Image (cartoon, rainbow, N blue to C red; front, side):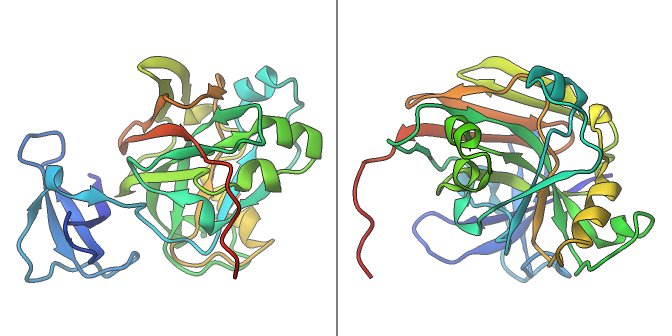
Length: 270
C-alpha cells in the first residue's frame, strides 16, 4: 500500500504546508495537513483537510542537491550510441533548478536544443554516508517524479553536464512523494502535447535503486530531502515554447509543466 505526501499552499496565502493525499483518483481527493517537512514524522495536525483541486502543489522536497544518473537504461544507452557504463555516471543539478507541478520550464535564449527526460526519483529520508547496498533502502523515504531537463547542445559541446543540466527551472519535481512504492518494474513515461515519446520500465535500469543510493553515498553524504534521479528511458526529445510536457511514473502520478521562452535579460545586480 502506498501513501502520498505533498507540499502545497492554499491560493491567496503564502503558508507552505505538507499534507497526506487521501482519495487520490477520485473527485473528492483531499489533503490532510501533517507536520512537515519530510521525512516527518508527518503526523496529522488539527487543521482541516482541503480539496486537492483547490491547492497549488509545490515541489514536494527542497533538496540540498539533486544527484542525476546518466545512461542508466539499456535502451537509452543504445539510443544515444553509448556503451553500458561500468559504474553509475553521477552528476549534480543545483537546488535552484527545482520547480514544482505547473511551473514553467524556461528555455534559455542561448541554447538551441532543450530535451525532456522522464525519470523515477529517489527521496532520501535519513542521512546516508557510505552505506552498504543491503542497508541502502533504510535511508530512502520514498519516490517522486523528475523531469531532468537538459540543454543537449551544451551537454555535447561542453563535455560536462553542469551547464546543460543546471539552468533555473531545469528540474521539475512532483507531484508528491510516494511511500511504499514497489519500484522494481514500474512504467516511466514522457508525453509532449499529448503524444507519447518515452515509455520505459525500471526493470531496464542498469543500476537499481539500492546500488545507486549506496554508490552515491560513498561519494557524498546524502541528507534528508535530497534526490537521486535514476536516469531516463529511450525516447528523449526536444521541447519548445508553447509545449506542455507530462512525465508519469506508475504508482506515483503525473508531473505536468508548460514550456516558455525565458526573456533575455540581465540578472539583477547584487
